[in-house]
Length: 279
Image 1 (cartoon, rainbow, N blue to C red):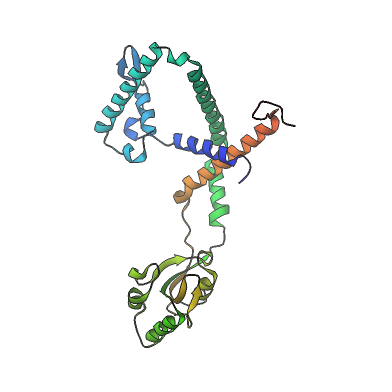
Image 2 (cartoon, rainbow, N blue to C red):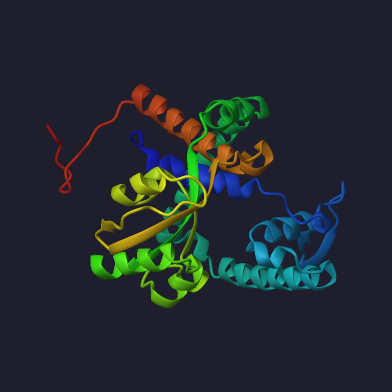
């Protein structure tokens, strides 16, 4: 990751979240009607929509007849507390002024980076990224295998002997394996070569479907008896399935590039923690 990637990732992530659509039933009407009023201060439907955007995803699916009154009630509570604080002029204290200035800076940063992302992360860009990174990339081979993990080589050879006499692999795995998936007959699902210990992968990828490795394989976990069930090329997700992931990655790259460009054009001075210039 390039320099300043952490800052760019945070900003791009917050912008991406803010761009998520609100529940359809809370989209503001063109007139943006007043839905409540507190001591003359209006609360509008757009305020309710914005509050809905900030909700965790599991709450956004609540029925509107339940969600709508709850959000309005929450906004009324927030408004009366804010009004009380302003009457006591808390917003004019030095500490709060500093916090408000930092918040304003944050919002301005998000607005600038958001504009850059909107201009550069287009559907055409995302589809091109999908072609380059997924659709046109050579598919990796995968195998689906079962294994029986044993403590000693002697135990592993005994299992191979039982298999040679016609024993069922899955049944032996449930009975004798100490490894993950034992309850499922030793099934490890599909995996790529680099997702397994080297010796295990070497043996598994040398087998055809239905074959059992002729000798036990030793890894740091113990001794494995391996059977391959299926082979395939890695399935390709559709563009729509990965669109949001592609957008997040592209948005982060755009944010990083913008920050680097602005830093390069700025006159930056650094000082020590005591305020003295750094040489």
